[in-house]
Length: 447
Image 1 (cartoon, rainbow, N blue to C red):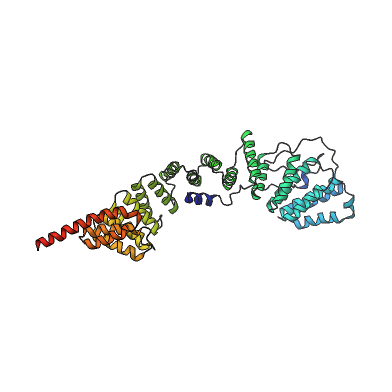
Image 2: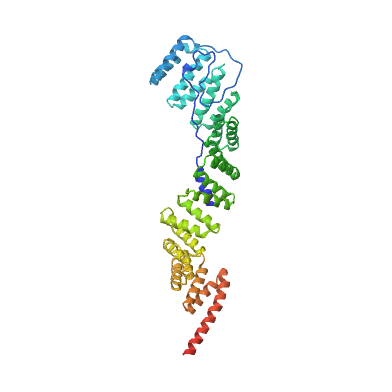
């Protein structure tokens, strides 16, 4: 169903789960005085691997003091001066004499500073300089890889982000759900759905096992990917979860659309009907779709009431299409007198004569022969009729009832030329000619 597909697609454009960026770069005080360098842990950040503790070099006292000074100045709101201190340290002759741990701490502090200024290219450069140092403490390596992968992601360098995050997975122990979501997002951006979907599902499985909440956006990401792959069955399953866990109008609308995609029309109708009962249908497309579903399920009177009410409240658009739909609904509900005003409006708005032909049929049904003939005339004047033969049949019937026999015969002769109306036109011709002959004989006898 094209309408269902359009409804669903419009709702999933750019559906990417949001993720708060928690870069692992930390104030230098997080490292000073520790036997082992340890990155500041972001909220829900996975634990790094437990390894044999390495003997970590310590910072010399003067470097320690300089870095503390830079941090203090930065906290006082003067990042430029803080960076100047770092630049002075790096440009001094002593820099080459620092051990790998001390150089790593300097570059890590650079990353922290640049990230605070949203200077992501410089942040990336600083992180890579941290990783170039030999014999890095495990915590610092793990934290730096994770932070670097996030910065690459923010900069839309997805291939690099994926490569670095996969390096992080190799050294991290017991990764948390947020890391798998980040990986899933990266693969999603590169349209590698076959790799993205398992990553997101892994995140959901982890939090389910750990009895932690599963974010709505995770399911949204899964839904978008399954839909893009054309896997409507899995999309439908995710939508059921969303509608159950996070009951929102948009999810019920999309669920109804998916029933349409899966050719489960009655369930689609039932879902939309439930939404209407809950007063969730408030837009033109929603009410028109509901009316169409009602007609498909042989509830024309209800469809007409919905459309009529929507038009009066200015919710349903006053278009020829919608007025014609209303007229058809009233006609199917055997309410021809109510159908006529709807068809009259539709006929004036329409660019073709089809609606005038439908109006003629309604006039015929209420035995207003003259208006039926007039409407057929307007239908042919406007032109572009899909079924001109049907209009000729209606015209022939109306003319017959007006006892305009010769004109009626001419109308049925035209209808007879069309294959679809040949049988009924032939039958009417036989009947009209018989009545015409009787009328002529009666008139002759009276004279």
